[in-house]
Image 1 (cartoon, rainbow, N blue to C red):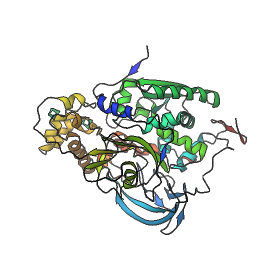
Image 2: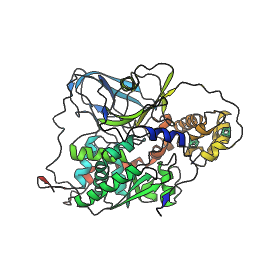
Image 3: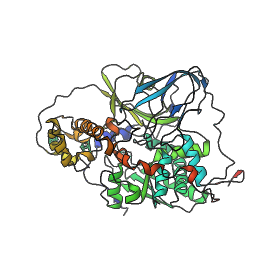
Image 4: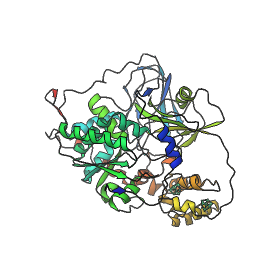
Length: 501
Ligand code: SF4
Ligand code: SF4
């Protein structure tokens, strides 16, 4: 019998997941593309420093052209244009997660012309150093939420000599299917990207983490693994690990519990505790996009979901304003809807649709009807505590925070909160527990800057957790730059001597 991994607590949101299953993502033969008339591309979209614009107002740019760079030795990611057109404006905006960033606004010329640098790679002898160089220049950051530059994570994994690469395919939040679509659409890209990154890190074990009810995804991954075994020179041990469908399954501390029975503390990381590094499956596919096809990170798949029954995936340039996507999906939208920048339970409500773009980490836009549920006093039912996967006494913490006794809430383990939103979801009294706790943590961390934050990171409400909590370990990321990596002869990918082998 197949072993099923899991953690305790959390929920199986059956109604919501049924909704996702009814969506037609598997039957979508062609991914619908969004061709916006303008994009607003943030120079800072994840962990690290803001990129510096390399173009000026009035300049013409092309698809895939680098428009923002990060100086060498600084953690961050370069930025590329997803449309061709002219630069209209460079200004500052605040993203819904609280990040203040410069943006480059580009108006489309409707010609969709690619930059001359965008060419597939055929003639390439490639080793760990070249893989790292390509990924660094492509601007790929983690697409699962935290937005850590992939090159930084590779460097840290090399430093700790990790033994396993985990590919997170556990997209468990209700309505979300962008990762699942990517697996179905291009399983070879997921497996090949992971294999290339494993080669760059120097690990020979790759484990794909997948929910047990994702049978179609399991089949396509198994077939892709068999193809990769024949194609790649690396000797890699691949494994598909099935997890019980459960939300919030993909968070790294819960994965550590399920896979390694390890209880990671707030600032612990996988690399130096269980000897593993984890990447989102779409991130791995994007690595292969750039290694094989020469495509840097200027676009991504976004799930558009609504409680009116519409739910499918689109491919949109990074920086597309929400208004451009939502109009094409839903026709006119009005004040009877709320639009969330993100998924149903963790998304952040957006008010300015014209000036809020999707970023490299925006996996979904969720449209829900505007219903103001009445709230009632706490019933002491304990459902919030039962649901919380991080062992927080949620009701107690909430009351302490409301009474301005937040310091005492720290004793209730409140800093471990991952903003999963489950406590609010299950509360029969309609109390918005998650938002109150998230706001408290954001304030607390800002006041305790030395311990929790980095000078270059504005901490937003929904990005205060996960690996963002590991800022004190930033030096791990910069320890080894690509230049420090030995330029050995070991070919790790199936390209050699001018022809694909
Ligand atoms: S939002 Fe925080 S407190 Fe609420 S269930 Fe999730 S982890 Fe627990
Ligand atoms: S779920 Fe709501 S009503 Fe029940 S104990 Fe928690 S806060 Fe109180």
